[in-house]
Image (tube, rainbow, N blue to C red):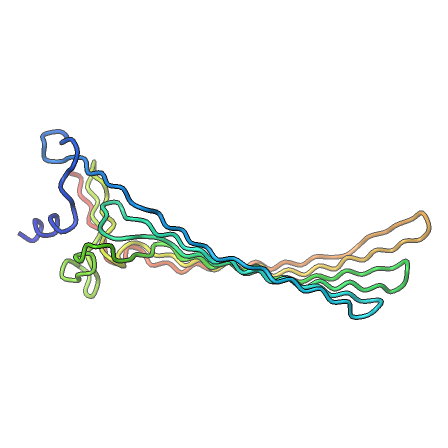
Length: 206
């Protein structure tokens, strides 16, 4: 009875042809993938003096993806946000010697494996769960579409990637001769926080 109530709650009946001995079949449905995005850029230019010019840019970009899961029991998706900040300072020492200094930060934060309600109330019912306090576990049966579980059960990953950069370029001109030299420094930070199959997974060969 427990298995029957679980299957009835999460596995829809076929609406297409039956397969094999007739105990499985094809279920098809159509759903929307919603992907809103918000984006803006701010740029500032300032001439501090005859020898100094400063400019800066800030960019913000955030977006989400929402779509039905494999059996239309819930909605899944991910969030992404990117921020870029740069500052550039140019200094003229004399007509022959120019300095350009730039610093910037590029940061991306993405969360995958998000779940949201989508009409099937059983997806948020912990009585179907096997882990205390969690919703239904995932189920993998060879030859069938894998059920990823109830709300909060699939694997969830949070990615934090940051690039911090600094560059200095110097230009020296003397008559027909030109020399350019400088340096660049970049620090990369890549951190991942993962929760694997929070609600558990049951696997069966048949």
